[in-house]
Length: 186
Length: 186
Image 1: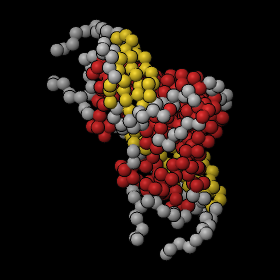
Image 2: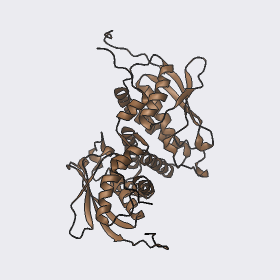
Image 3: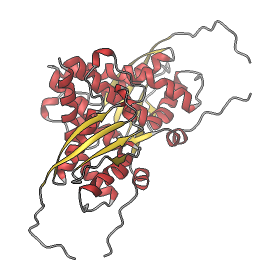
Image 4: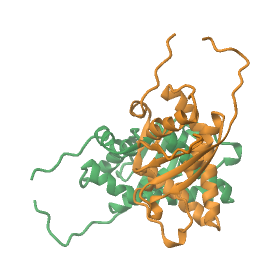
């Protein structure tokens, strides 16, 4: 059987069940507000959001692989492009770009100009230090870990802090080779 | 100018920004899990979800009125139909039905067969008494309060408790007549 071609982010997004973006934005806002109330330090809120995102990334990668027809990526470079062009489109309905590669090809940035998580969001002064969208870094980390890539994900720019875009640096720490007990057919 | 016709739930849903339903489901699940960890009693979790929903309903009603072209509903009966057919479709992408009216026309049920909030959700035995989707009752209560209807919203059936559908009873407690300092044009 011929391999099925990977689908574009637009095609995948059109084919999945969706809910209203504003409902999602307000729901996410309710989480952040709850954590800010419950936890004492903003840094703990960042950690908790990251952990929630990690747990979600571990789950979402299955739907991603099933719906996108993306098969094994050749390298980290291709993986980053797929996250930005297909992953973000499929889940949030927006496209991200990839840039700022280092010479080794193990660190890059995923850059978002449009981010539905922050519609209508303004942070009060008491939230200095909060990475409001930190769930996203966790999702990327969790999803990549499921395809054997251990990464560190760090915010470089954040529009809620006055920057001109959202920029997440993704650094590949370790790539665990997958071993199969069987040979591929081809 | 001729009045603009109200739009169908499908048409409105097609025109709004949307995100992936599974992402939303997992995000909502993360809230419930967080509240279960933070709060001691399941009843407190129910209350907190209801309160979060209320705050969201108060906000969402604006988008609803702006996007749906629904203008003043004649009575509570029409309001309930609009919530079920246009509101649920516009925000969650599913349609609900209305039934179980009392003789006075002040109490009815909104019935959901399909509910994206509970995809993949199974409640452990420790969560007896939890109304997992309680955010929905709060959203309805909050949204209706913004159009001057004070209501009480109660779960009658819950598929996570083994029922065959989700049924929310909406009881109109008080309708505050809106007063205008000016006359309508017509």
